[in-house]
Amino acid sequence: MNEATVIEESSRVSIRPDGDVVAASVPALRSTMRDAVAKGARELIVDLANVQMVDSMGIGLLISAHNSLHKQGGRLQVIHASREILDLFRTMRIHQHFSVSGD
Image (cartoon, rainbow, N blue to C red; front, top):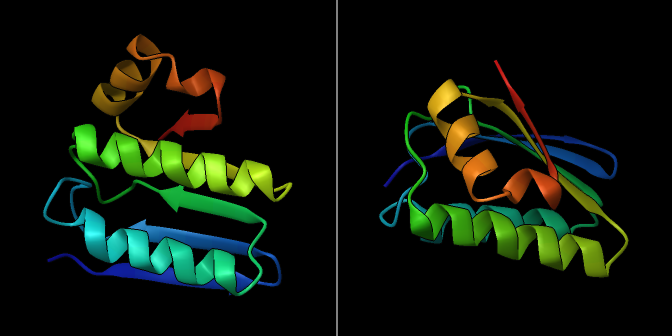
């Protein structure tokens, strides 16, 4: 199970997973994200600088986080995605739902 670095700044929280966002790491990451939102985060930034791969479970997690935040007037942003992850997100049109940027 991977850990994540969490930086809280008022209603903005940055989460940097320390490894791939895949089925094995999703439960811990989901818990971290839920805790941040429960504490009042309205802007959640997921920093993929240390991530090489995002699988279907990871994509589901990001979409779920986006939906939860959107209902509360918040927003999700994904930063530092690799070229491969950016291509995947564009192919799936995920970038139309929330902000996704590369290195």
